[in-house]
Image 1: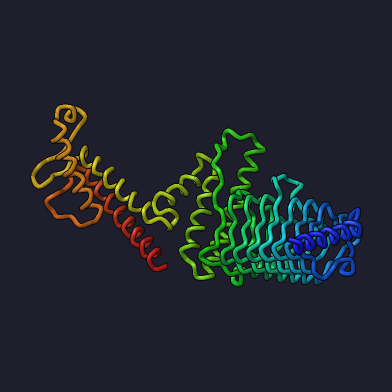
Image 2: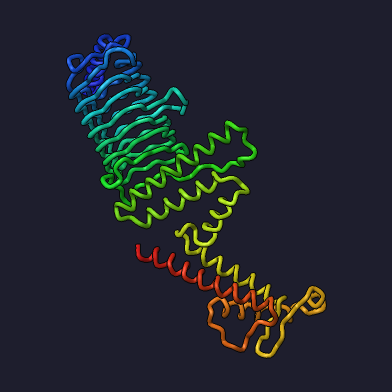
Amino acid sequence: MGKNQQCLTEIHKENQKLKKKWDKGDIGGREDLPSDCTWLMFENIMAGADPFGAHKEIKGISFHGCIFDGCRLSNSTFTDCLFSDCYFINTDFTMIIFEGCIMDNCDISWRELQQDRCMLMADFTDCRLDNSRIANIYIEARFERCNLTNAVWDHCGIVDCGITECELDGFGIVNSEKVNIKFSDQRLSTVGERTFIDYRIKKHSVGKLDERERNDYLELLRDKAATLHGVASVFEKNGLANHAGEYYYQAKSLEYRTLSKWSGEKFADWIKWALCGYGERPLHTFLTIVVSTLFFAVLYFFGGIDANGCVINYSIAKLRDTGILQIMRDYGHCIFFSVTTFSTVGYGNYVPLGACSSLFAAVHMFMGVGLCALWTGCIFRKLSR
């Protein structure tokens, strides 16, 4: 107990020395800092706070278990510094550069996300940020040749972020709707199966939003869709085609929400989604086959077929006068004929009657050939991955 008390006393003394030395935002270079800062609390410290003032450089310092609370570290450069198990709470990073730094198991967060206040505006070059956490902050930063393994960005507004040649295995962005990331060199950035980028955006009825809210919402969707396209490309370059396909699907789903409600472009996009889920959902194709089979069975039910010598040709009046069991039996025959027509098998004992049923059958056969090929292609694409 005596050793612990002595240790805390020494830490308190070091804090008091730094408070006096750095009073009113006066932080200089390496000569003003001990080479190893351990378990220190920095409160309301300003390093180069004036963006138009002299640029401050802090080089070769190790920070272990330190807490930066309410500090402003703007207009500064940290070179070859080590931050281990450090907490940056309500700390402003504006016009700041990290070069060759290691931020191991660090936490950068604001107690509450407030736009235009909590900003991380920084350039990270050749830095290690593995196992770090960034939360409740707006990010406008560049990461070049950085290690972001197992790093987590939680409840962040990623306004403009560039990633180049970074290690992203286990990297995650969660609970973040505003995501605008550009991958400058997709071939050299590495991802893994545990890499996750939050693709969700809460749905809003665009018609109920005013013009400004609508524009902001559409921009949110477009930015995240563009980001997910970039993420999909990175996964594909890393040989994770299944993950790439999933992010591609999510990107196309967000783009669909940006299209005008009654436009032809949106209808065409909906057809792509319904038929095959943009090539990523074989189940969509299967459901389309089932629905089309039942639909054409209804057409044959009223258009007329010869089911092995039994003529089935209903009208509304005949439907009212026929029992439910007979209707179900006849509709079952029509479903069987619909399946054989769709699959282009045809046994010969079931044939269409009249011009309308023959036309329906011709269209159905063409549709069957296309949907079968599409379904087979989607399944093969999934299994080959």
